[in-house]
Image: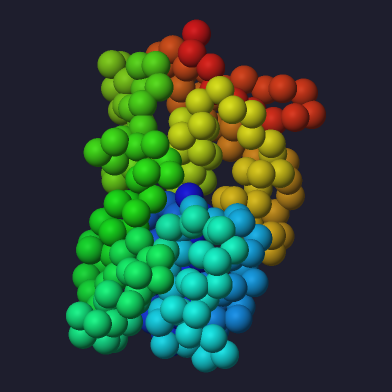
Length: 223
């Protein structure tokens, strides 16, 4: 799952990015509202975290602009303000949730899971297909034969496929959503991680397989 983090306090931004990456999110960090708007216009995110007080364009202005453009990406607002009127203004502008600084990392992660749950089709933080269950909170893949904790990129790839069962996902789309436009790795890294996942599905005796469509992409299919 790919998130945009727009926070102008760079030390806080680095800390939040580290927390999110450690919890298997891909993160693009920007430091002002204009840059946040430009990134969000790529429609390449599963969610965004916007600080309200940012240079060039504040978070509420960014939020209003993308909502006026019809962009439904889930948005969590961050601010040092705690007044009720500020919260109401943010929610009325189209925010999905609101978090006041300072906050605990666990609460941030829980709110991100909650606001993105509807988009992933997850219920109670799980995705299921065949005899497989993917726990979005612990990054654990389970079947009646056992369970395995997935590495970051493995988890994100399988989350995309289980959240869109039967849907063809191209290597380019995996690459953009998980590694990002600025990554220096080669596109064939997608195939490498598909291979890792296939081995884990075999280990778990899954009745779900990763199928490949030549020169088109990959999809999950029950066997």
